[in-house]
Amino acid sequence: MFDVSELHLAVALDGAGWHPAAWREPGARPAELFTARYWADAVAEAEAGLLDFVTLEDGLALQSSAPAEPDVRTDQVRGRLDAVLTAARIAPLTRYIGLVPSVTATHTEPFHISKAIATLDYVSRGRAGLRVQTSALLHEARNFGRREFPAPVGEPAEEAADHVEVVRRLWDSWEDDAEIRDTATGRFVDRDKLHYIDFKGPHFNVRGPSITPRPPQGQPLVTASAGTVAPRAGLVDLVYVTPRDLDEARAATAAPRSPSGPRHVFADLTVFLDEDGAAAAARRDWLDELAGAPAPTDAAAFSGTPAALADLVQEWWEAGLTGFRLRPGVIAHDLPAITRRLVPELQRRGVFRRTYEATSLRGLLGLERPANRYAALPA
Image (cartoon, rainbow, N blue to C red; front, side, top):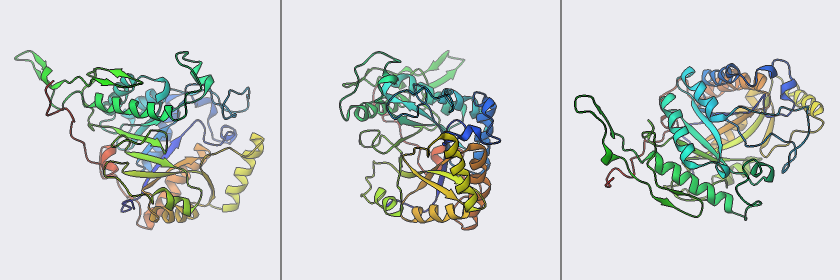
């Protein structure tokens, strides 16, 4: 059983919301979806609610209503900003909340991702993470043209594990005190404290070191949906699961926990909230009607009051989950309902923080700053 001494909350931000028709709800600001202000406002709202972190969705092809191919629909949001760059733009405007952009390991080089997330950790002063995802989609692969598809079963997860391993080693390739910056002697860096990682595997061959010094957190938070990254010790700090009911929530945390395994298990929930439960259900039905069908989802979808959602969250949390990543059906409506209605209800019950107790994302989640794996080794 996992440690359930403190409840953690995150929100997943995607376009105008997780419902395909979200952009058509009043107040959704569809004309601003490609502006920094839109995303800064959403993250500021999440920070006002004392949430642990936000994730920013991303992909390497246009969104599609079809599971495995492009579509030609023009009635849903298409296009998005780069998640890592958006997080870097927002970072100086926030103080406490973690910023966790999504990255597709399948088509990106770990060297690039390592320095991008390290940079985000610097500009956010220790609040960076990443959400690792994979792709088995042919139309995404065609945007790169460098590999055969479909990939063998299991290969994307194994490749993602190698990707994360390289990223983590590159974060450690500079020791914490490698920078000297001594103007008197003219020594800026201690070369003996920069290390080659010499990673060789079936997917990557990376020597290192990184060009970016070790991040403020040492190792920014690595998150992934269950099954995305092949299980190896110490690779993922937090996994997202998609239980549909209490029994599945219990099952998600029932396996014995390895000391080197994920420290957190968050349940994903899509939420539609109103002060009246019937109004929340009616709003969701109206959005389904606009979209022409119920919104597809891999996670449970909740429609109801913030108090009823608090009941579900508390029940599943007490079953062993350590947190929740809530997906607002409509960001303009459901994100404020989370921060201004759900959070105060959980605070009244004494299960959620009333102030930020740490300035780093690892600190908010109760994770120590890890030692550098290369610190005792020759350069």
